Length: 440
Image (cartoon, rainbow, N blue to C red):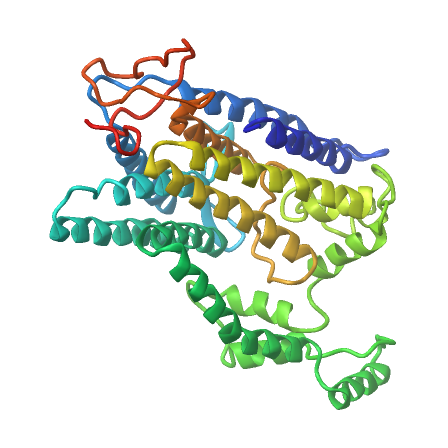
C-alpha cells in the first residue's frame, strides 16, 4: 500500500506527459515522458535503498539524519547559490555532469523533516535545560534551510518546508486538544482576510459597471463585468515598482487578486471548465493540444488541469482519491510504528503531500496564487518524484511492527539490522529506537 497508489499516479502522469509532449503531426517530439519513466524507476531504486540499506556499525539513525541534513540542507543548498543554473527569476538547479539537473530544495525538505523528527524525539530522559536546548536547535534547523531556499527565490518550497516542519514541532510540543482549540480560534481570525480577497476579486456592482463601460470604450471590449486590473492591484502592492529578492511577488499577487488574472491562470481554469464531468477524451483537449496553456507548464505546474480536461471531474477525483490513500497509508504506518520519531516524520510527510496537492489544485482553480508547486507523483519532475519516493522509503525503514508482532528491542551490539521477529520475517528499524515502554 505504500507503493501501489504512488505508482498508479506515476502511470497516469506518464500518460499525460506523453499526451502533451508527443505531437499529433509535424512538430518534433519532446522527450519528457521518457525521462519521467527513468525518474520513476530511479525513485523506486532510491525507495528500496533507503528502506533496506544497512547502516555502518554503531551508526545510529540520529547520526544518519544529521549527515543527510548536512549534505542536502547545507552543502547542496549553498552550492546551488554559488554555481547553480539560473532559470526564470531564481537560481534553483544544479547540473549533474551536464546530463540532467536536480533541484536540491526538494531533497532538503525530506532530509530536513527526517532530521527534525529525530532531534525533537531524542529529548526523553534529558534534563529540562538540555531538552530546551535541543528544541531551540530544532528551530534553528528549520530556519537555516528555509533561508537558503528563500535566497534561491523558491518561496513555494520554503513555505511547504516551514509548514510541514511547523506542524511537526507543534504536534510534538502541544497536545491534540490544544491544537484543535488553536485551529478553532484561527479560522474566525482568518475569515476577514478571505472576505477582503473576495471583495478585491469581485468588487461592488458600481465598480464593475465602471470597468465594463471602460472596456466597451476601448479597442478590446469584454462583454463581462470585471474587477480590478493587474496594473491597479500592482500599483497598490508596489507603488514604486519592485526590486530585490521578492521582486516577482507583487506581479504574482496582482495576477491573483485581479479579476482578469494572468494568461496561465485563465487557460488553466478553462481546462477544468471544458473538461466538465467526463472530459474531452485522451489527447483531445483543445486548450492543451492547441497550446493555449503553454506547453512548458502543462506537464509540471498544471498537470491536474490537463487531467481534468482529458478525463473530467471523474479523472480529477480519482487522482485525489489516490492521494487520500497515500495520506492514509503514511499516517497508518506512522501510527503503527513503535518509534515516536516515526509518527512525527509521518505527520510532517503527510502535511507535505497534502499541501503539494492542495496548492497545485488550487492554482488551477484560481483559489491560490500560482507559485509553481507540482502534483506529487503526477507532475513531471525528477527531483520531486525521487524525493517523494525517498520519503516513503524512510517511512518503510521506520516500520517497527509486522503482522502485529513487535520487533525485538534495537540498539544492541549486533548493529544493523535488529534481531528478526519470531515469525522469521525480516524487518528493519533504527538501532536506537526501541518499542515504547521497552527497557533498554
